[in-house]
Structure formats: structure tokens, C-alpha cells
Length: 142
Image (cartoon, rainbow, N blue to C red; front, side, top):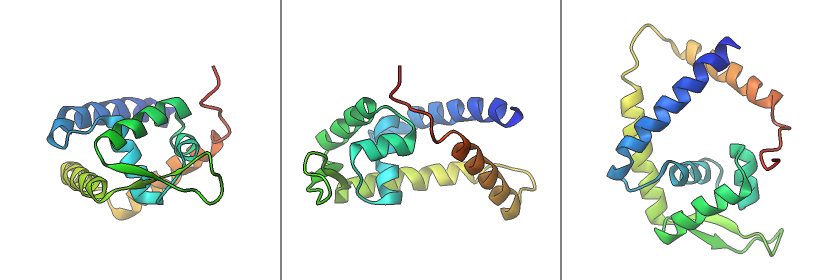
């Protein structure tokens, strides 16, 4: 519970910081999350993105629509399912998410202290295991 007590406020503060600087790229936090997910995993369907982010399909669809309106993503045919297209980054989308992540990494490199790569790897391992524990939670349930 100590980890959750720290992660919640940290997440909210980082999101606020992203929102404060989002006008630089003109991206909302939700659109930025969609672009980042597609950058990391390649083309995905809206339901896949919703599950990956533990967000409702409807919310992700709105973010995809916003990104498409900005020409950052585009639907492409999905050979596995005709009614659920794959969402793909456009060249403009790739450029936008690269600019955002480059700026964010520069900000986060300012974290001081004596943290080592092993410390970061351990933190990622702990958070990954915690996420796996709750992967069965239905984010679309009321």
C-alpha cells in the first residue's frame, strides 16, 4: 500500500505537468497516451488500447477521434477483424510523440539523488508485478 500511496499522487502531478506543457505540442493527455501506446506497440485496435491502458473503450475512442482530427493517427484495415480497424500513427503523429517524449525525458532526467539503473529496474519490476495482479479488472464495468 505504501507504493500505491506514492504512485497515485506522483501520477497525478506528472499528468498535471504534462497538461501544463501540452500546448507546446497541442496534445491533450489522452491523445498523448494514445500516441505513446501506438509508438511502443505499433498499430492497435481501440479495444486493445483500452485494455492496455485500463481505460474504457469509449474514452479511448474519443481520444483516437481527437488524434485523427489532428492527422496524428489513421485507421487501417484489420485483417483479423473487419469491424475493428487498426489505428496507426501517421508521420505527423510520430513526430509529435517523439517531440513530447524527448521533452519529458529531459525533464525527468532532473530527478536528483543517487538512483542507479538497478534502482530503476527494481522499481519497474515491482510496478509491473502490481499491474499484473490487477490485469483482470474490467475498466468498462460500471
